[in-house]
Amino acid sequence: MLVITRKPDQSIVIGGEVEVIVLGITKEGVRLGIKAPRSVQVHRREVFEAIAAENKAATEARTPVQDAAALLRAAQVRKPRVR
Figure (cartoon, one colour):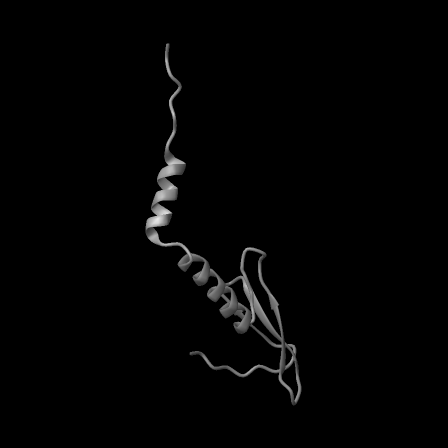
């Protein structure tokens, strides 16, 4: 883990495209601003973990056998009968 010290209005750059700026420091915490391309998802840790848990629950809701059967049904292409 990289640990650095920044003052208000100072920033760090991650991967050349994400900038994290210290907006202010109070007794309650640090205010950060994040500049990132729209293609980069930025979430608070608790939101990220909730999304991950929902995704995991959604994938566990179906068994691999159910998924394989659904895939086979979707892949079946009926050829028209030639007369």
